[in-house]
Amino acid sequence: MKIRTQRLGNKILPSALILLLAGCVTTQQPAELSSQDNDMVVAATAEAVEDFSSVTAAREKAIDQTGELVLLEESLAAAIDEPNPTDTADNLTESDSEIIAADEVETSTITASEPQAPADIWQRVRSGFQLQDMDHPRVKSDLNWYAKHQSYLDRTFVRADPYFYHIVEQIEARGMPMELALLPVVESAFQPFAYSHGRAAGIWQFIPGTARRFGLKIDWWYDGRRDIKASTTAALNYLEALNKRFDGDWLLALAAYNSGEGTVSKAIRKNKKRGKGTTFWDLKLPRETEGYVPKLLAIASLVANPEQHSVSLKTIDNAPQLAEVNIGSQLDLAIAADMADMSLEQLYTLNPGYNRWATSPDGPHRLLLPVAKAENFKEQLAQLPKQQRVKWVRHRIKNGQTLGQIAQNYKTTVRTIKTANKIRGNNIRAGNYLIIPAASQALNSYALSEGQRLQSKQNINRSGTKIHYTVNGGDTLWDIAMAHKVSVRTLASWNGMAPRDTLRPGQKLVIWSKTKNARSSAPAGNPMAKAMTQKINYRVRNGDSLARISQRFNVSVSKLKKWNPRNTKGKYIQPGQRLVVYVDVSKVAENI
Image 1 (cartoon, rainbow, N blue to C red):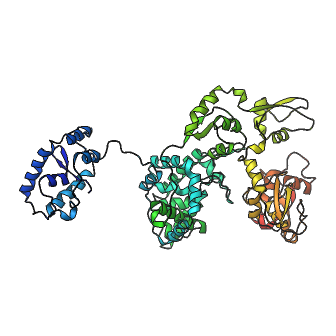
Image 2: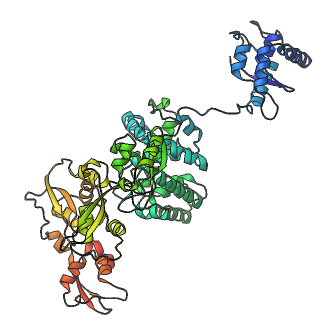
Image 3: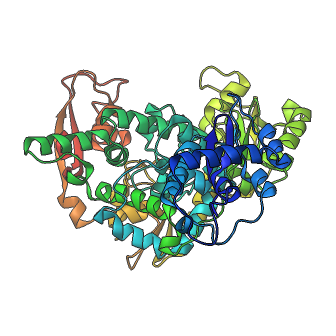
């Protein structure tokens, strides 16, 4: 029987116990009590209960700050006998039922002074759900898909485990809908190294421009889009800004997160002009966006009631999994992993923002570690001499070497070498020595560094003839893909790139060519490419440079110089000069 309570002056007593002691609850249907009789019964019972020492103890134990009493179920269970099986709502009179109904209202405000947090985080997540339309018809197909793919859910939430508590904490602190904690399921399936064809990276899938707009740092050493804490903060800041822009409509904010605020605003204006609705469900948006919001609502609906959909959710503790440790300066990740007593792969998974073999010399200077390992790591780090945080190599400069070549050989940056050696310009002299930070282990030991991830991707066996191709000046993904009869997106995917990423001369690509006589260098051309190439006489404008013109027409500076040897001899080009440019009009028609 569920225990209910009634407040009498400053006493709180179980209503069922009141009725039982007064003889009003029996195995037979009781006679209806008058209001006066009921008051007498309640008063008499209140005096009788005072004799129960266990109840008195419970009362003394449960006094809250306002001086009122909180009667705990555990104390009652010890104070009264097992309730009669016939003591149910069906056996109570109308007036008894009214007392119980009043008790339910009264006790809704009575809570333990220190409510215990649920051990499993899913209960906490469900209690924070705020979004509507989970039962919208467009949600059903995605809900059915998730419900049929238990293994996908298992893999996704195993990856989410170390990060999920932090995300839930941040969302709850801001008072945002807890459904947003599930957004990385839709964005990346919680894969920390996810990289999309649209150049989006990390569990929140930021593109470079938006990432920098919300304070995420991106350089050779470090990519904040993959930093779990930094990217979570940036993503929630972005979502809050979008929600404010769209007047508190979270579905529109989510649509804008996927396709851009301009796209959603344009769709709203269009519908207003036509007298149509302006909710998410009314708008004509990109196909991906129209499916994006229903996917989030579908996974939220499944999390809200997994049993209904015959799935189970991995247990994730409602407690911090990670501790942030301030390391102060650059640190070799192999050394860090050894001090933390964990594998390099585990360390990279918790700190996926670091691209190379060490943390960035310019920061951030922090690591996320399992809570249980953080203190021991701090102790060992404090004992590690600063000069042993990274390995230093003494390099003798050879004739013809440049800082760029040396940096590439040691898998570091020109800036790092210049800073370490206090070099201001770019000039170095043969015979001099440089000190250079270098990895303490073989580079293939850093399996989840950017370079090793790329190498693993390029080594996957696929259909076709495998070619190792070195990028030449002026090459584009489109040219190379057409020459080998593959799509640009496929070629980019094989090499860990997005179709719009730029190529660098000397860059190594893997191509699974579909041509019969595949070669490691691109053919001189093909009929389609030649047909789309036109000769342009370009007049140099104020502010132009060879670099700017090359970007405008998607050609290399070296080709511009080759085509215009007379006009490019000097250091600068002049307004009014004429340059010959051979362009692919299918790609740069808007610039001609």
